[in-house]
Image (cartoon, rainbow, N blue to C red; front, side):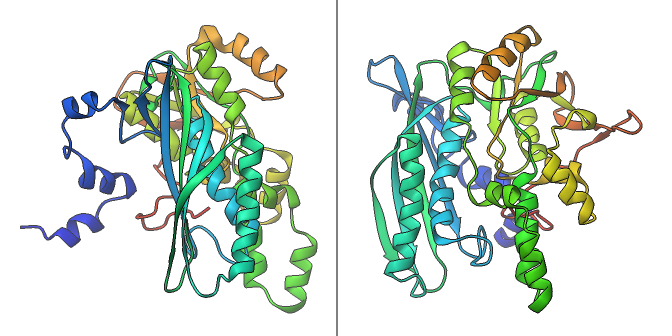
Length: 359
């Protein structure tokens, strides 16, 4: 008989979620409770009470030494990003964020002044996205800080965009460039590992836009709302764990194949320059980095032009990076050099996988 420990250790983050939760509550019970969409998407969807809208509920946590270090994030950045991650999950369902509950586990090293700065950043994010912070919990921790946020939003009834709506013949799109946050983290980690004159030199060359993308990612609320209100988004995910990982989630949830084209990936000038100067592949950062919080989704080809024009009017780009095909669920990448396809690894940030790219 296989031991529990060995069974768990062979699973990634999403395999563990399924192991811990699958089949625990019956579908008819969840339906009677008003659950429209439960575990397995960016946010749960819960029926409203005759208001013509549904509730969206998402939860996320940031843990010191796992998601951030002193040399990569200031206290206010941690607070901002902790809420922004949850706002992004609401955006990925096409919703509007409304409320947040914030729980913190505070170790001795995080004194009152450091926590005040953390909450400065959190409330800055709350003000920017119209989120009311309405409660939470505070407890002590032995060593590392934990910030756990639950976000609540709304979406028009029946309009929540899930991962499971991709169909053969649709386009695959992004609402912005990716890889910036991963490059910013790389730059900060290089400085953290350097000493003396080299540390000062790297600090002078710090790519500020890339660092800002890592410390203060921007959730795509406006883009998600437009896609939901107009009924354009067939499936949607926010790029929190990386394009490759998010594409796999859509492919598996929708039981389709996503074919991404390397030559169509939107690579910013700053990212390309930084990658070239540091022996990195910009395409790898764009595919496997995370925490850019732009949206990855699919839509009918007939919607493309109208989507592009409407999003552009709001200052939001639309990049078509591939297409959806029927077949075994998975993701393939078409090489920019050869035009040949190869399976795209399910890489990105995964809490329980070896060799994960942490962002």
